[in-house]
Length: 212
Image 1 (tube, one colour):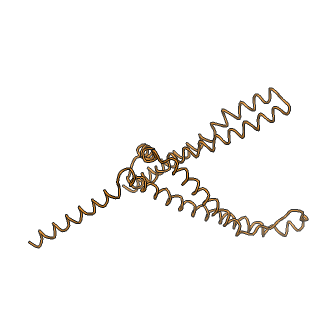
Image 2: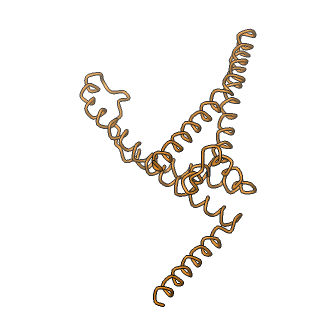
């Protein structure tokens, strides 16, 4: 029952992340690209194309910045839910609380994790040979179809492996940062040491009573 409750909590957190990601990607498009397209159609000509491109680029940049901010702000929600068995609302609030005064370091961690994920993907992709079909006759392309299928299959497998390693690395990095923030803001390491000392003292007291 406890495991099922935790699974439901993590499913809820995953759905919340998906909803936030969708909102971050679609809202700038609706409020920036759509008006740019509308006014561009009214203007016509080269100015319309320039306006649509500018609106799309601005919307893309806004989406990336907003997505990064939201992801960083909620980056400790999953570790808090796993370690403290918090509800969805409580773990989101907990993440914001732990990140107060540490957004700069959280941003640096986000960039490092992103760079490592891209590096893992690039390395595994480079290991997969891809035959080139540029300037090749159609008959030779037909002969290369088995190699292309094999390359596509290996590329898909490599992508899944890269995603798995990237996810493991990101989860471990954010979990360590979560414990680091708890140690800095709440003295978690001292609290844990005190609990261990108290448990050891209680065990010695019980053993002493049994011997008596």
